Length: 225
Ligand SMILES: C[S@@+](CC[C@H](N)C(=O)[O-])C[C@H]1O[C@@H](n2cnc3c(N)ncnc32)[C@H](O)[C@@H]1O
Ligand SMILES: Nc1nc2[nH]cc(C(=O)O)c2c(=O)[nH]1
Ligand code: SF4
Ligand SMILES: [Mg+2]
Image (cartoon, rainbow, N blue to C red):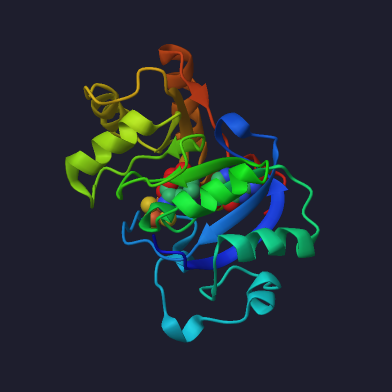
């Protein structure tokens, strides 16, 4: 089991999206994503440039998002939680694409230490996490991993949070929800892309019509991380 994680940022904030909206959380943002969503709000996490590896304290003190990262393992991160003085009891592992990493050790160490753990993932890599991890799936339709990987993610998802800007995105979600593998108990959210008014109007109207939930990126409305 690979133990080494590449961390783009780690910070304490309020979960802004999905079913845990409003919950204080420690975010671990892992470096690397090959999916290439054109509207992605974390493009600085896509490349893993070996020359951008820096000491943990330097990466943790960045004031603007950038592509620098540090390397650590599960126990090291837990120690950093203490030295950073974090108080939250919920941890969100995001990226980049966190499922590029084998997260069984990290999620187990965190759960054993008493944290609730959530992962934000695109369903393009096999999800390797502790069973008690809450999986928020934001499925990406140019599936790098193919249908086998996607179906595993749809079956494992506790929450499906679909970014929308156009009617075709609703059609894509319908296709995903209709797959036999999809967890019928998963909560379904529409998340407007980049706070656009048209996207938000579409998400609101469709949520009312379909009895789905609305996920706004609330942290962006109030200017927190
Ligand atoms: C940056 S991604 C990282 C985790 C993972 N790669 C994924 O896509 O789920 C975290 C969440 O932000 C969403 N997201 C990214 N850019 C967005 C944007 N411009 N507007 C709305 N949601 C966005 C993604 O769909 C996902 O739900
Ligand atoms: N506050 C806050 N909530 C979030 N929920 C998901 C995020 C992400 O980037 O994965 C995110 C984020 O970047 N900030
Ligand atoms: S999968 Fe996630 S991190 Fe990767 S490009 Fe898409 S939104 Fe961004
Ligand atoms: Mg974000």
